[in-house]
Image (tube, rainbow, N blue to C red; front, side, top):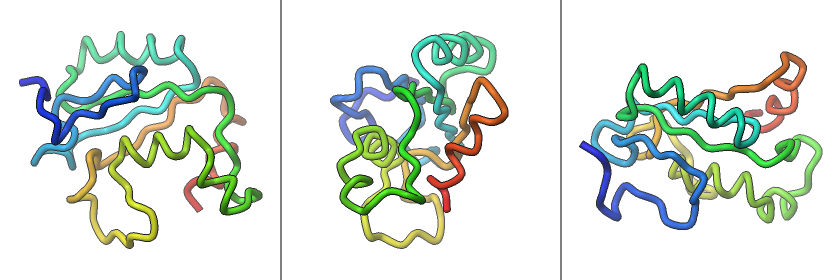
Length: 126
């Protein structure tokens, strides 16, 4: 059953294809797929026709993600893409997490078009 209530759907992120179970009691089963742009999102969404939309959401990133290892705190806080990812996942600033039970997604998948692009994301998770 699709997510239709305000507790689990996000407003203001038109490019987000949200998982039906995101933000529900089944959110820990959900995977957010980050793609490099709209064309990669189209490929990911086409794959969802096979696996279903209940536990998979897709969000296209615009350009290269900010390398947070080398960025200042205010740069990170002002970066729209990072703030969007935090909003989609349900992350709160300065909150310490010990599990994914309170998040909108339990897993994160990053689709890149080249192997060396992966290193751009390494700093984000450090």
